[in-house]
Image (cartoon, rainbow, N blue to C red; front, side):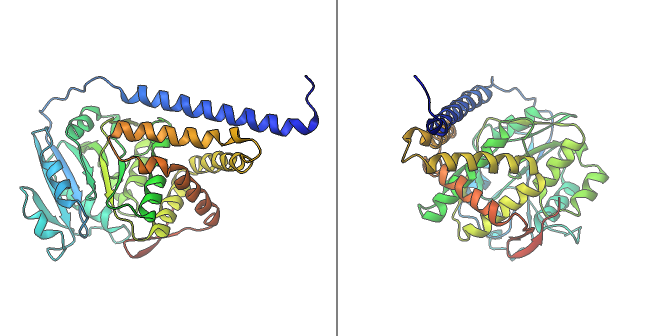
Length: 351
């Protein structure tokens, strides 16, 4: 069989589609093996402080608080940090047995969340400090899993599956976009600390760490950079929380996430833009060669496996290609942008 010059682009596109699809399948298999870890064992000796900054009323706040209090790790305290007792979450917080701190705002250059974290770190009694988010519900075993992974040279994290409160186009697109976080957390070199599930020994928070945080608006980005600068390993807990949301401003949310990733992980950003650019190019020629749509289907299938593992809804998986495309477009439109809006405040992101 003789291949003409006109056939070569088609052959190349088809071959590339098959290779990309096989790579995605391989990634799915490796993820499954990586999360099928043996049961963890943790001694109850270490006192754990679970720190939860709250601002405003999240739709599942009661469920969040209950899930943290009911964790099977017994030697723990739950610390909630509020800006004031006027916060609409305060009446709900008072229903639960926990410590309430008022944000002292110990830093003028940091975000409100970072200020809340620094306030709690000073008051916490635990040997291990674990950070949670008020829009996330935590499965049983989550706390024990995180605590079992931390040591002098290790910090721990996990990443949640998205749970939209209602089925709207904004929520579906955000949930699909959110699945992109899993592309990094399963790879040790690119793994990052997610702010809603971070665990450290108390000794991690030296004066230099607290000084660096005092100038930061992004808590998890800064802590990831500090941990990696020390040569620490970021361990991954395979118990997946539930991130509940009802998105009102999708554009602002995606822009904030994309600019933050581009600033703090430029190599990962470039890799994603190159990869998804290829996937979209192959998809564009799929009317001529249907097999070139295979990487998109493999991408969706990969996230369906993740949804099953997380015992979560399949909408994020079905919308994951659209979510990735949204991230790609926003990435192009904000290549020179460095400003984001976070809880009504405009912030310039600095690496």
